[in-house]
Image (tube, rainbow, N blue to C red; front, side, top):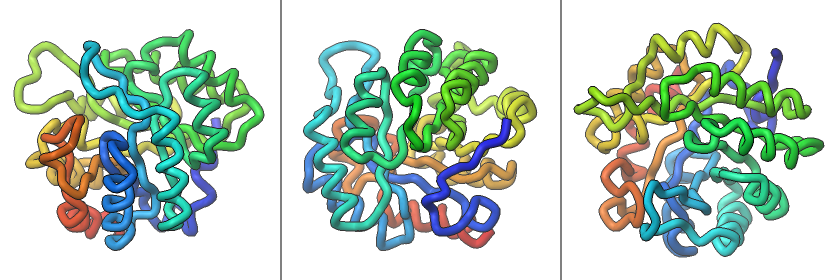
Length: 258
């Protein structure tokens, strides 16, 4: 399998790591714009925000959906940044493409469902859009590989993986176990596929994000997808694992000098 990743970037992965950053969820137009402006100021080119938020149990904030897609358009128009969001089904994929979202990713819960991934792959057939695939929360590398293959078999070529850690019973100091050796099996199976690290979901705490990012750097990952909010303590989702753009700037320094 040979892939080309995000050719819309000014430089290739060989010379510039990919940094995707933004809030866990798009909460308001003001929130995404303030955060995007601050991220652009530190050199981030790709703005991420959750439009649809999958929650384990009902009752929590589940995102603003299509309304928030309009906010992402405004972010792109005002800042010139590329935009990225998570999709969980074919309807999400179609809405994101129609709204002009530049990059989409498939979340851990969706990757675990071959039916859902296949429906998304079918809906994206014929579109030239970058798709990122997170590993499933369960330790099943074949599910992750299978999701990549389903998209590839429907003609999608701008693919990349996201390592967001795995949920295991004995875990106590991180939100999700990185299991770096397991991920190496995935990397050997699809060696030409770029892989980003998601230290936010691995760490589950802003105090752990820098060290996990450093580990990914040492392991030659191709970049980071990281949650950043202009005021993390007020975030409606995952407030404890989001960092301010100023904190992200310190993490990026090593990556951008590679």
